[in-house]
Amino acid sequence: MSRAVAITGLGVATGLGIGCEALWEGLLAGRSAIGPVRQFDASAFPVNFASEVDPAVSVRDYVPKTYRKAIKVMCRDVELAVIGAARAVEDARMVTKGLADGAAPTFAPNRVGCQIGAGLIVAEINELTTAFAKARDEDGSFSMKRWGKEGMNELTPLWLLKYLPNMLACHVTIIHDCQGPSNTITCGEASGALSIGESRRVIERGDADVCFSGGAESKINMVGMLRQFYTEMMATTTPDMDPHAVVRPFGTDAIGSLPGEGAAILMVESLDTALQRGARIYATIAGFGATQSAELSTCPPKPDSSGEGLADAIAQALHDASIRVDAINSVVPLGCGAAVYDAAEAAALRRTFGARLGEIPLVTTKPNIGLCAAATSAIDVAVGSLCVFNQSLPARLGSHHVLDGLDARPVAQRDARLEYVLVCGSGFGGQNTAIILKRHKR
Image 1: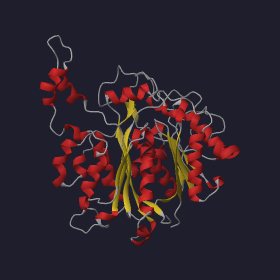
Image 2 (image 1 turned 180 degrees about the vertical axis):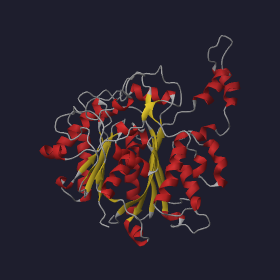
Image 3 (image 1 turned 90 degrees about the vertical axis):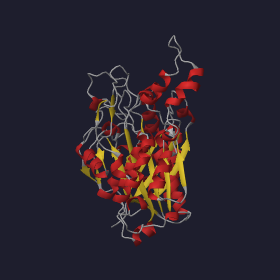
Image 4 (image 1 turned 45 degrees about the vertical axis):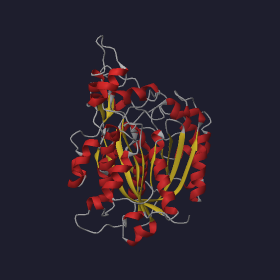
């Protein structure tokens, strides 16, 4: 496993826009895409703010004309993944079957893999309520008998295919003719980073030359919003609050996170093929680590006051990269603004960096784009790659009152010398990930 792996394409969709350029420009300027929920009336919900992808964006513009009939069996999560994959191919200056226009594909199909993180997808309320309405008895109560006889008939025969988590990778592999190893990982906010780690291993062992990798998810729906609220990760909000000031990563006055939706599909490629084809290399993946924290696997999660779980994942990544901890120049943490997760992460960073922690700038994205579920850690890897590539740290939003020893207060964009950037965090369920990105000298 000596094959080096690089990131050569970034396909991003967030509330800041479509494409890595929109994300990066928004972060540099310190813009927040969080506002009142537009997809449904959330005024009576305990959470009524979110970061949403522009509803005017249509997946039809990102698939071949011959594939447009399949759009009717794509839920929002699948659409975001397909959009992200198309932008990743374009950004990597590659050709695939889905975007060939008569040209030969850059890679043989059996050398292209696909590992995408997904969530437990929620069915669209309108579809279910129509079916439930047909399954009521005369007194208005739900009848299982009528559900089986009449209610289910309101659902299309292919209804379930819209909501299986593996449908994200399924549609991407069909559109782009990926015939190499494929996988779906569902581990909450850690899903995207775990998928990137899996892609790296697939390429290292020689089973593919390039992989679509990352995550996508939308929880901007009634059930998804409530689920997140009851995990105690979300802030309780009221419509009169300032949506841009709610999320305060590592703040001593933190009140919780806010939901976002998005996708980050990265082209993870062997360094040798990237160099051969003259690809733009955002960064190389120098190290990867993953562990489990039992304390964070409960609902609601318990404080991991020692930070041992995440610290172990970081230690694995450092060992994998064959570097000392003092080589790290910046950290892109989860930094979701939920006290339990922030405290565990802060403890892990103190355990890792010791007295030097206050000298290491943190890059926090959740005040800008919310907590994007399975896409979260993949978006953070994309941001870390942009930091390394541009030798710059974006502006930071949040609280002026942060946990001791952390460089996490609001600050404007600034240039920086970045050789190694650590991207780390935990997902709901307790999975911890750490990825070390290395600058590629151009």
